[in-house]
Image (cartoon, rainbow, N blue to C red; front, side, top):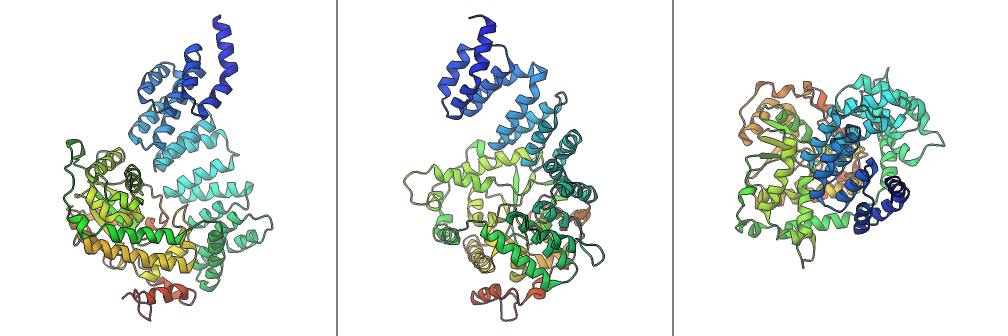
Length: 533
């Protein structure tokens, strides 16, 4: 067959071959590539996709090396690899591919957006921002793209720019709930300057979809609370939260059964057992600090204070510890539940894998912060896998905690937070589990009270630094001036100096929070007046 005929056959059969690849018919694809060896970009792309899909890492290197010799093909292949590496949590290799992309010729809006999405998956909005700006310059009428840009600007405290972009998005998508919600988060409303009438008008539109009504409802509740109209704020909040709960599948019984199993199996006898001996590869000089607890309890505040220290870097809400636990437990054979399987994990090996993942985010700093709130579930497992880790547990007034959670629209997490009775029940189970960890790990978890941090920030910061074996730095409390991104639900609040405005906030909604008060009182967590016991 002539080279022209071979190429024609290759291109003609390519859609069928990709279908075979999607069906994991790897040998058939390999045979096709061998029979149709043509010097064409699509041949190299297919070879790369086969190597990635089949898990043949050894084949990836020569393919990408060959592609990188062809400058016009380099960017696309490097982007595909970056997407693969970030999805498989190989963050160091991902950043190496992103560096190759930066050297490539100019592409189009879709390409820039895809690069920004990889940076966003790395929790790096500052790196994503210039790619989003370029993408918007190529495609200024793309509303979804402009929203992504506004979101990155919000995380980076570029509030005026974010507001301008959100206004442009709303011209095209006037009922987009996520846009309305973010717009309200970019500033505090006042009696003279708010979107309350505007939001009420949009919420009354018959074309409003249920998911958009949720975002608009939370925005309205937030602005009404800002101006002090607490009764109306809670009406709007309850309606939006109820709509959100109707859109979720949440099984509290299964979650609480897991908590109970953790208390049963990870007992004092388990921690008294000698662990396996770490291999040399498992030994690391990296020192993790876990900041955990219920959401909205000040975890981000403490993270920002500690993150100002020159020896420390925050790697954000890092999901890898629970993921590594789940993967390791799944490999244990012949056990009834994942919790029971977790008893048999090789914890030094687990810690080594976790540190390897974290090292790709720590940028050479010796100490890093992992601020994933629901790591409270894994306190005992953390200490078993990482004896050198420091655990800081944020504690806040129970009713303030529950109210702060209830009024927050989270991004695909904390399904328990949209119904008051479920929220109270979850808080009770959380307190039981933390009491258990304190009992079996005495003196190994530092409780830090939010109210004390905002009342006595310097003394509490020094206490936290002592716990982490870090020297005092005078500018730690100027965290609100830091230019680093914050991608948590507290992104706007941490741009403000420390204040006590949120302490005892729940009392302005005391009647509305009756279902929570009754449950917490019955559990012995608060007294009749609502104060913690």
